[in-house]
Amino acid sequence: MTSRITLLLLTILFGGMAHAETAFRQLRMEENSARPLDVAVWYPTPERGKAETVGENIVFSGTAALRDAKPAAGAHPLLLISHGYGGNWRNLNWLAQQMADEGYIVAAPDHPGTTTRNKKPQDAKQLWLRPQDLHHVLDKLLAEPDLAGLVDTQRIAALGHSLGGWTVLELAGGRFDSRRFMADCQQYAVLSGCKLASTLGIDQPSASDMLSLNMRDSRIKAVVSLDLGLARGFTPESLKQITIPVLVMAAQADSDELPARLESGYLAEHIPVAHQSYVHVEGATHFSFMQLCKPGAAALIDAQDPGEGIVCQDGVSFSRAEIHQRLFKQISAFLQQTLVYSPM
Image 1 (tube, rainbow, N blue to C red):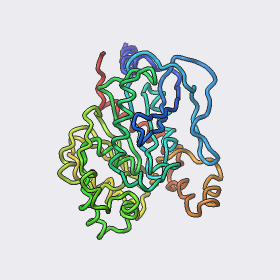
Image 2 (image 1 turned 60 degrees about the horizontal axis):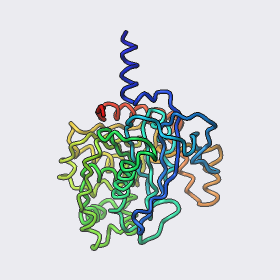
Image 3 (image 1 turned 135 degrees about the vertical axis):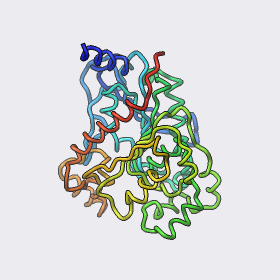
Image 4 (image 1 turned 180 degrees about the horizontal axis):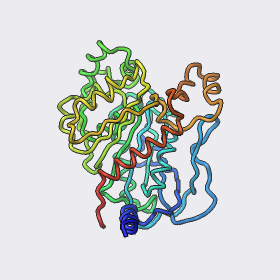
């Protein structure tokens, strides 16, 4: 009897999509002509067919999905994903795929100026537009359910890695003080965020007012930060006022440039205990949160960009695949506990 009740609850929770396939489509959002967005979306579908591999290249593994398939009926939770500096939607494809398998709609934009194919200085220096990119993607999916399915507005979360972690903390209510950040960099100049201050325009007085804007989006009910950077620019006062659940995940095998103590640990110090969960991810480096590297990938990357093969390095205890499985289980459990199902 208990197992039947559990099955029924899971069916209700995920709109009856326990056995759905995962679909994938790419969007070009040009509503804002000055900042068009390329967006990848994963979502449940009732269709069956031959899946194709998406998000794969010569060094990174992709995932299997049905391209442009019909969205499944019913309302679904939504997870917005923000990539790190110089990254793109492919970086967290492994997680997007698994969350879509669980019944989520997952959307990941490429942030202009800080993405792989667009590092234009003028775009990179408008850091405050990153949270707005996620606002716009959310608006799009809510307005056009034919794209990926109907969104359950009470079950919307945002997740980000590295600079993406900073981005989603803005959506949770964190307020960034560029002057505070630059003063802090006098003491912690080794931090990667401090080294990027000029690239991101943080050191420009003209950016200070824009970066301090309140980017809180009340539609977002939970946030996940994966080894974020720039944390020390958030004011303690704003972090103490966060009232939605926040899962802070930090790499155990950290580095001097992104030490957990000074970045993720800073969040844990100031976000109210009642609203946060803090996890040290054993065996993970900063790059373990990214997609799986193919055999020999590090050497191929180093041949083109010496030293960049580090993106395929993990800690000594676990493989990246093992780390990903633990991350997925923890993130999925956190979201199931914090995103409240609402009959529609």
